[in-house]
Image (cartoon, rainbow, N blue to C red):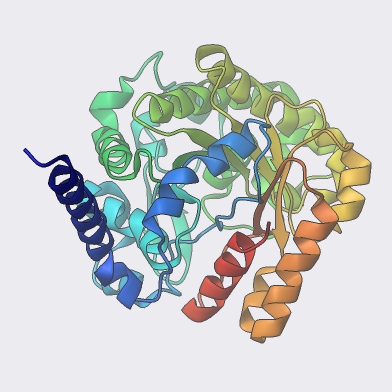
Length: 387
């Protein structure tokens, strides 16, 4: 046997395999995603590492509400199926979760779902009305309502009540393992509690704040039950494949600093502590939307990273929080409606001000429906070209 011919044949096989691997991405590349399979393999866990506080060679990037109606492929589903059908049908939820990763090569895939998803398992039904948002059929407003609220894990078997969440995450894990980071998420107890008490979106949270002021003991009991369920639900997501958990305090803008300290922070900590006790190596990111006025109150929370809204300069936030607290954020989503140069400058400015330690690039809120897909691609690729 000729050794030279064997080596030559081997090299040919290797080249052919690489060619076939690259060819499998032709469809994605043709849609505008600059996928580089070799780079993808090297950087598949860059977001996970950064969230853990490990050193990385550039800030990883993903976007809140990256799977959304700004994408034409997403609208093929949202125009046809109601929200809960999309989020509770694993085949659809998986497809919607993967769309922005395939299109833009973001560093993380976040499960397509909603912070309110576990409520029916707790005995509280809701629907999402197109153009109006969530609507609770029977809001929680009395001591009897709170008493009837079931606690996940303790009174309810999550797997039997939320099998679609497990199936979605397990499938996503199979499709993304060693390729990108899989992100799960939950709503914080106060935000979930306010949603269910108001019955939907609210400008002033009158029912919620009324109970906080007039019957704080009852409200604390309400928060405790929700914290137990949120912690259990986060663990359930990790046990089915999620590598990082983001906790959304979506209504933080409704809270004064004192309200946050009294009614929100303790129960967010309770939920996150439950997760960290069971899964200590899973990074937790806490996002208080509108909470930048009380950033100092977020230090020392039971999370690994704080996500910032766009209403605080990220350099000033670093000084207020301390240089050693990892942060995520915080480009204004409206920048994506502007010119290409403005998007690139926003990325460069944010990364520069955040510093080179413990920063995941994200928006200060979710991607807006009016955002051009090209703008998201520019943001992501600009971020990934930073060294």
